[in-house]
Image (cartoon, rainbow, N blue to C red; front, top):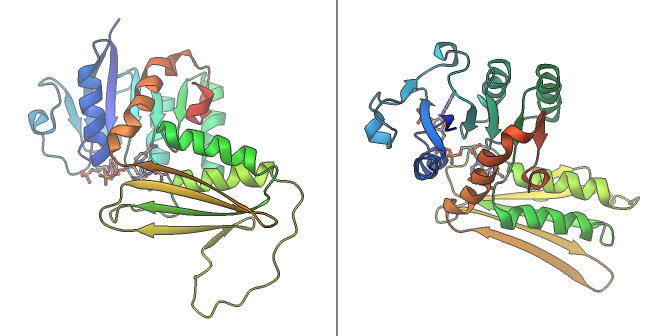
Length: 259
Ligand SMILES: NC(=O)C1=CN([C@@H]2O[C@H](COP(=O)(O)OP(=O)(O)OC[C@H]3O[C@@H](n4cnc5c(N)ncnc54)[C@H](OP(=O)(O)O)[C@@H]3O)[C@@H](O)[C@H]2O)C=CC1
Ligand SMILES: O=C(O)C1=N[C@H](C(=O)O)C[C@H](O)C1
């Protein structure tokens, strides 16, 4: 049976890639899009002619779609995910910026409602592998810093991927002495601090999405790096999520958990 898909943020960079992906899949059909300032012309955004365009959540009827793909903004993703979970739609969330408390609350709602869903801070295979390798390396190299580099239009910092990487490192590294207090003669020059792991966010035109994890040891160093040169790199992960999300029994965090 064809699965009905709503794309939130369908006018954006990732939204338009997702539109092209879903249009290419015979078992999925775009039935609706959500975007606050979109022109109501499905053709302009390559949506099927009968797809409905919504400007706000409250206009969307329950059960309009089976799957809700979300590439919107950090300020709207919590409400969007909650709406999908409570209206019988399985969320596939790529938007970053959810806090730990928000994620926990959404998982609890999904369990209560018995509603499937997935949140993936990164749908790219290179980033999923980078996080896995960084998690492993942290057992042997507890001293780590992260540099993430993104296009100049990115709204949130640090990236969701960098924050997830830092969490995995913090969870897996052995008991660790923190560095003595440092003096910054230039404010912020040592980056953000997630439990002693420094994160440096670079925003430049020409970049898409890149991350480097630097581990320092005794007379040696390990660097793990991934590059998304094109947003197409995220689409194989989105495809897997579309195909597998309805097999989950609640909201799962991380693409690696469904691969
Ligand atoms: N998980 C992953 O693998 C990836 C995640 N991302 C994340 O996806 C998100 C989107 O990225 P990107 O496509 O580059 O961003 P864009 O700015 O290109 O697109 C954002 C989209 O969200 C829409 N939007 C804005 N406000 C709202 C709202 N309140 N409700 C619904 N839609 C809204 C915009 O619509 P309008 O034009 O009408 O304002 C636009 O369609 C970011 O959080 C980014 O970090 C990005 C790449 C990969
Ligand atoms: O905004 C982006 O572009 C990206 N956002 C995600 C993040 O914040 O980690 C994933 C990827 O890095 C691209």
